[in-house]
Amino acid sequence: MTAVHQAVAGAGPYDAVSEQARAWRQLLSQAGHGGADYTGQAAPGTHGFEPLAHLEPAPGDLIVIRYSAWSSSLGRLLERPQRKLLVYHNITPPGYLWNHSPPLAIQCAVGRIQLPAFARSARVVIADSEFNAGELYAAGAESVRVVPILFEPGRLAPRGHAPEGDGPLVLVVGRLVPNKRHDRVFRAFAAYQRECEPEARLLCVGTSLNHRYAALMQTLADASGARNVRLAGGLAQDEVNAAYAEADVLLTLSEHEGFCVPLLEAFHFGVPVVAAPAGAVPGVAGHAALYTDGDPAVTAELIDMAVRDAQLREELEQRGRERLEHFAYERTAQTVREVVREALA
Image (cartoon, rainbow, N blue to C red):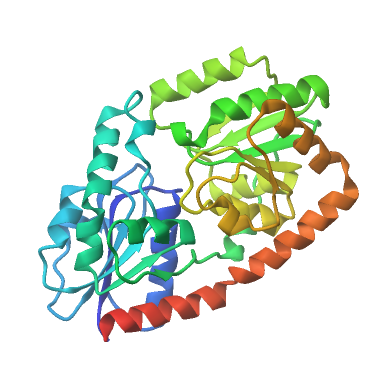
């Protein structure tokens, strides 16, 4: 059967794009497709990816390009004659990054400039959310299929050690990067502690943009007046699962989201969600989240409602279960098989 290769600019042990490449690889292998997954750069601890420079596809092979950042090695794939399928995961607007990582800002700026070229080169163009599809259409794509992430509940089963402490646990899951607006999180959590639950805990899970940015976020957390704040960095999946199982609320105040996988993870664990309605968040969460305008007092009140109001928690849990049906694994897997067949036709 035809080999299907996947290519990403950078891969890591925990990030959503790498996880999706691994999930697709399992599905492709089950369907009998050979091939391998390649990356221009691998973070420490990454498994399952080969150097992109080693990709030597046969003439009839399919190349799946997972586009979330520019790299010259990805750009060279556009010159290859093989059929291509573009999966757009979104690229962070560079304005968020100039002050904290100019090289990454340049990478994102070029990535957005080159998006039309990637869309033109692909036989099939897909986005994992309606929000990302909108960006593809704005870049000139003529036809875009929306194919959600492959959400695998099985990976959420293993449990590590539960976070320490007894107060209500507010959980934030996502990289420590400017667009996630952890500064807003700290201010809202400080208001929640001050007005509602003095012993509340805040756990932020996710790797940082760099050491300097992590130090800045710790400084902002301290300056907010909040206590019991832990910036945990990247955690193994079983530790993340334990955090969800312990959490009272998932909080996301991000200003730019291409999908936001933690929403589905929270729904799986029955954890209420308080979120800013930015980017793909409303399209993914639907009516299963409490939305905030980001004002610290408003956000604090919504967190308190989600923690204390048993009837509200039950309603949100039910809505979360209903929302998960839209992202059921086999439903999405069938769509993935269809788009691969279409790209190979």
